[in-house]
Image (cartoon, rainbow, N blue to C red):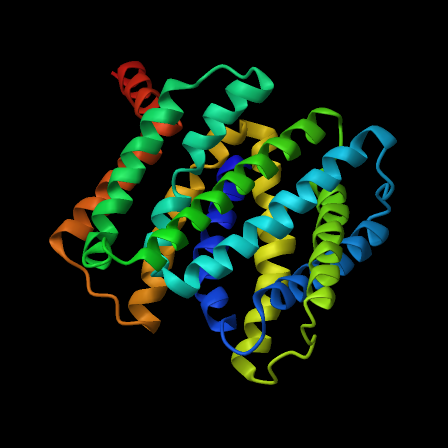
Length: 299
């Protein structure tokens, strides 16, 4: 079950980067994000009704829901949409890949979770691999002030993602399923974005093109309803530290999509980076130890 949730999260989120890029243009980012989470919230509430699951969360959960809606389904995406306007998507992926380290540190600081050496070591290996994968794209971007600001905004978005993951872990420890909490948190995030967009005078007209509408549908249903539910279920099952390691792995899927749609050129260093990412995946989940134990038992 854990492997299935992990694979779904990696495959879906690895392709959402391209869909986000297709949304950049005439529609302001807050409007695109608001549409995405209004659609996703409506679908989740409908599914909850069909499955006859409880919809109303307990009073004690509301403060966590509001915080998660603001952090995970509002500020997080605002940061990444704006970062991708000034920073190459590969650099944004490099910043986002530090999420496992941030989850480990924040979990220790705010929830008293013990640090997991394998998760940290795996994340460091994965981060090094991601840097190797995008080193060519990173070249020539060290003196651009706007891109440094974009990197800082991407870091803030990753911090918001980490906070949202820990809040979900806290609510799951209260017995709440991500299906229910995501519904309310997405609606809260969409409401904040809608109010902010109206105050800013943005139009809620969407771009009437197949690319934009298709990207919106994919991000709302696959990226939000399925992707976030799978990821946050994984958070509840294996902890936010190991679950967040998919943020290191899914840029590999993004690279595959980039190879097909954007003409990404592979190099020897990029292949080495891929090997490091896969090795980090093994370390993060203690798979190297399990494989060794199985071989010893078999012998």
